[in-house]
Image (cartoon, rainbow, N blue to C red; front, side, top):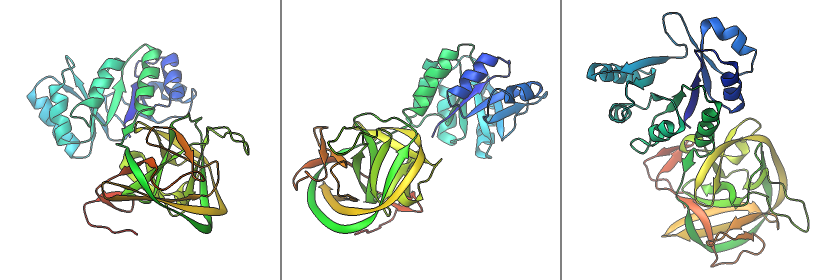
Length: 331
């Protein structure tokens, strides 16, 4: 997850308030202004003292020559969070630094510079530090970082097996976001083969829509969280981060407001893509919908062997939610 920080060392109440309302990860503030800034809202304040030093291992490095670049690289490798400012905002120093360390942040002044910095060498900088007097720039960059933080390659997998398997404990994930048609979560018996479960955005003859909810499935299954990691569905609770994806594979982070575990009749859905298996244990109910290959929605009660559904496959196995390059067999 990329960090978004606003530099408010030139104290501006409107800028700080907008930054807090936009969900920034931190605000840089002069130590002389810290007390009045705290009255505006709760957020991580990175404090700059009279000598220019920052708290929380952040450090500014202005790149004016090769020696400055080398200094920044050494600090980043030593674990410092290096905020890089280039005199003419050139990309080359950032490319060189990103290639050596992930602890690189870029000072930018607008949306266009932020977009460029986030895309350098495909992986981009770890975070953006915005200096601006335009609160609209804060809102635009926040949407860029917070609402499109990860992309995965979804596949069209063919359903090979549908099996009623009796009662089990399922997890309904109530998020703090109102989700739209075409959005949902990736869940699976294995992290190597996951199925796209759609949010409850659709009206039903039986229940009203609940666009904040994904009835995600059995407690043992994996789902994706920020940073390419996975967790078990039973680990989700209020305040935890979770990834939401659309049918194009664009993901954003939201938070769990409530996780409901209830005993329900369950159904096993298995599919295959290029010899790779995808499987999920879902609640056997009309309101649980998957996404077909043409992006239309289908209830699990109407699903047939041979249907194409959206899912996700990856090569690596997992150990404690992290990708590992080893052979892991899960049946």
